[in-house]
Image 1 (spheres, one colour):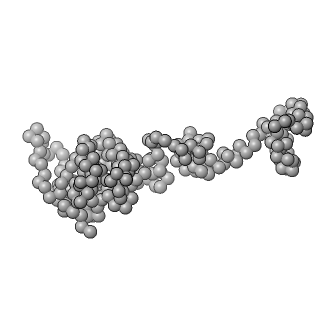
Image 2 (cartoon, rainbow, N blue to C red):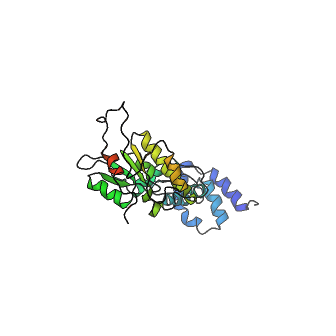
Image 3 (cartoon, rainbow, N blue to C red):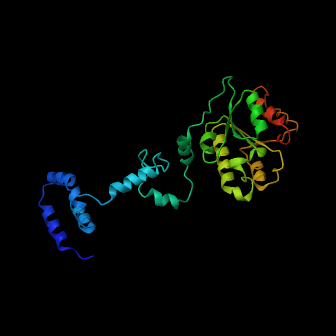
Length: 257
């Protein structure tokens, strides 16, 4: 675009204005700039060190990610261009689960009043009710925040009869993303010392996701109704509490509706 005569004159005049006076001009000249044609106003703003629309973009990015879920350096402010990159993002963000949990409310994973461990997981209603009746504090694992919650849990239980609601379809080929998140949560919990159980019961045992779960070394399978394996001769039965395992073995083979 060819330079306007007025723009050339303004550029030369701006060089003659002392820096301290430019601040005053920026504060008082906005009213005049709004009355000028936009190309001229843009050029004047550039001469005095003000970028056209910069503040508007910063405010828009902050409003887009007011809770800091995009993981910017400063809390409450999205990184530059977050809206565009977020729409085309690829790859997993390891901190996204914790940020989402903070936004929704951090889940209490402390022990129950009686000192029982917190059991986090995907559980059918009968299992959840039985755990609570025995004094356990139960916490559901939910898509999006499961990794952050599992990281603080002392025990994790994945019940094949509990894949309903938000987890519906996670055991089929249509729910690969859900299943991958669950596998990641189980690995995180196991790495932090939590005991992880897989309750294999119900009609979903033959689904591809259920078969994959049974092959995970981080999940110890339990089949309700079957006798509990005897401890190895090198183990002292008094070393580990079997209360939770016994409860899982005593479940019904199919959850009550």
